[in-house]
Image 1 (cartoon, rainbow, N blue to C red):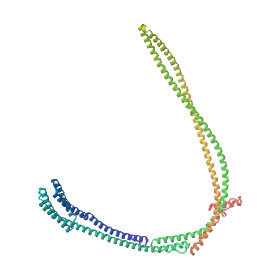
Image 2 (tube, rainbow, N blue to C red):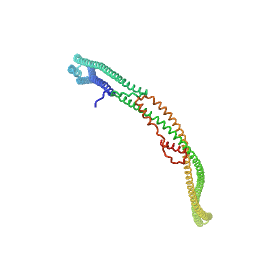
Image 3 (tube, one colour):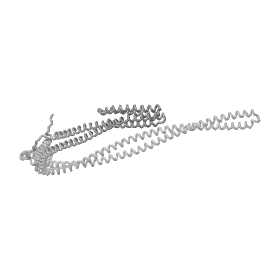
Image 4 (cartoon, helix red, strand yellow):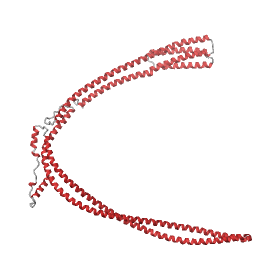
Length: 563
């Protein structure tokens, strides 16, 4: 599907797409340049700078070996000599490893030649150091020979140091060149980016001005049409040109103009019909007002009767409510009496249990008295056997037996009394239980009476509420009837006002310019908007006995129903 470049949306989208593509190209170019700069910076950071630092470290190790070799000439013990030799060997190992690491990151013939020179001069220097170390380790103390070895070592060290200096200067030169190249690339990228941004901005400004000119011209056309419609000039049709979004706007405005033209024409035709209809509404409202007043009078009488019925039913409900309260009080009293009888029964049971416990205790006392009598008898027998020595003890035993027999006799009498008391308590408990059962029956009967009276009270309340609702409904119906009467009067006033507003509407619609053809069309259709004549006069006389006033009222009612 092809693009329609005559539409503003398509043009605007194309311009934005062009600008976005231009910015995308600028951004891509910038990104690629930044990637290259990042690679250059990474190469410098990960290769060139470490190479320079590695050369500096190896130069430091050479200086440390030279210092240890001089220290070796001054040592006095084999242990000191061994420590110095170990440090010299460690420095040689670090320099050899550094040269191999340096060789991994070189890519030019000059650098490779420098690495070969480093290896060669390091081997020479190592040989001189080995001879010097061997002389020192053998314990030879000839100062001249040691001095000769020292000069030989120094001669071997000088070219090694020079080749390291040369390699460092070469790496620093390459580092400076790469840094300068990065700075030149950054400056070039800034110039390119500034030029591209200015070019894109120029294109965007030119496209914006072009679109604004076209938009202003099309807006002027739509504004002219809107101003003509705002001035109530609907006579001239709207000219629609072009194929862009404003064409749709002009088409909608043309449709709006045609719709307004049609509406105004129909309003002119309908205003006269509204005048006639408003007169019929006024006539019908007068008849409805008289009927509504009669209905309101009947409803007032009905409301008065319902108020009297409501008062009677409410009095009956109040009486039933009082009876319900009295029955509830009686039920509460009977329920309380039942609770008291229950407490009495519980007390009688406690008395019976206490009496039984007393009887048990008296039995124990009787048993103790019997055992005491037997013991006293045994004591008397033993006293009789003792002769004169046991005579006093026999008297005491006789007195104890006498007391034991009296205690036993008293215990038997108390047991008899307790037995009689227990029998009486049991008889009283039976009577109390019988009275409690009777009281429960009374409570149940009173409760049933209370429930029945409650149902009667509830029914009376429901009747009172129902009659109250009916009375309220009648009152609301009366109020609504009164309101209807007021509304009928307001409707009559509204019909009169409608006639006045219709006349005003005709005057307002007259300000629109519809053209000669529309005005002739409106004049031709005006008679059809007139209301039909009343139906009542065409009807035959159905009831000759009615008066003329009754006939007129019936005709007005029929006209109102047909309307």
